[in-house]
Length: 187
View 1 (cartoon, rainbow, N blue to C red):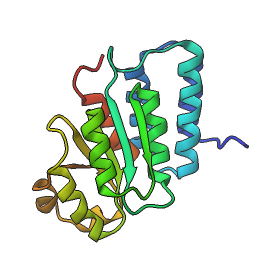
View 2 (cartoon, rainbow, N blue to C red):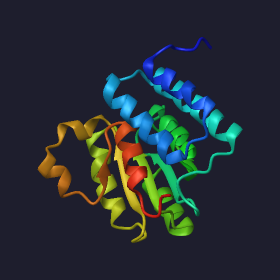
View 3 (tube, rainbow, N blue to C red):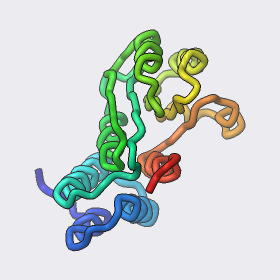
View 4 (tube, one colour):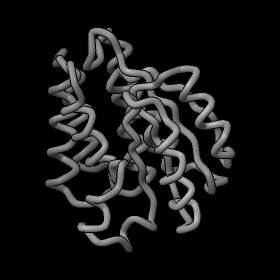
């Protein structure tokens, strides 16, 4: 694969000469994403892979002494491009990720959450009817499980409508990483 040369990747490569904390790496990445505009999925994925390689090569610890558990799934997404990016950056931050898979029935997701008691349930939602199912699911999840979602349908909802939901909408990888940086007990 040919590397895509962007200011974002230049920043990541510059981290090769130092051993910063994971917090510093993610803060710099978020700053670069916000400063340089929107990036293609390929650029973001490549940036994540490079960072994960650097993290592993330098034995940089994640954000938590005891990592949170995140279960991921989709109700109506058969491709899972968003979850692929979320998995990559979650692992980079140090989250313990347990993917359930694509196109999962609500009962399976609820059961997995009741059995594993995850800190986070991450989902992508593509269709409005699935958002209704998500709202019903949230009522049956363990109290400590925070639900974070993304997907195009949420762009059609007003801020007031989203504020009433019992889940958090994160529209892009920058918002997701901001969320992880403020998640409890980060270093």
